[in-house]
Amino acid sequence: RGEMELQSILNLPDRFLELAMEQDTIGWDNFTEGKISCVFRKLQHEYLVSIDSRKTALQWTSQLISKLLLLVHSQWIYRNTIVHKRTRDGLKKKEGAYINSKIHQQFALGDSMLDKDDSFLLGTTTQDILALSGVEKKTWLRAVIAARLVGKNKRKRRRKVTGRTVGYQIDHADIILSDTEEDNRRKKRRQWDSCTKKRVKEK
Image (tube, rainbow, N blue to C red):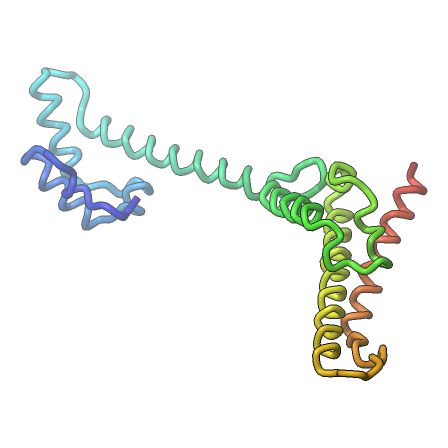
């Protein structure tokens, strides 16, 4: 795949050395696009003459190029199927696999770093969340991640305040989150609530 030269193949017969050197110069990518060395045709002609075949080297070379192009085209179709094909939840296969892995990860973390107000986000099963549409999965995931971030930062601020105060009553203002963090959490929760209400109506 372009990492090893054709001429570096062990025990390569001397009659193939010219072919290997010329094809290495042309390159692997060009080879897969049907751009092959003329030595292929020359060697094949010598072989066909030696076995008294009616086939011509030109026919063989044309078929070789056609098969190379067909191979690349098949790989491209397969690649597009993997990358662009959408699954039942509406997500592309690759994206869906990534989102599902993140959902499993969030459930594995449990209620770690989640405030009581946000614990309802995990008040369901992994399978229930995986059964949602792609949009709903993303909405849930964003809501949980935003909630964890808020919880994590709250605890971090609380430890910081506790560490620097002795005989001092902690003021809630010292550990309050930034407006951006709180607003982001509220926004994600509203989006998830909206998805939940929508599903209830559809049922």
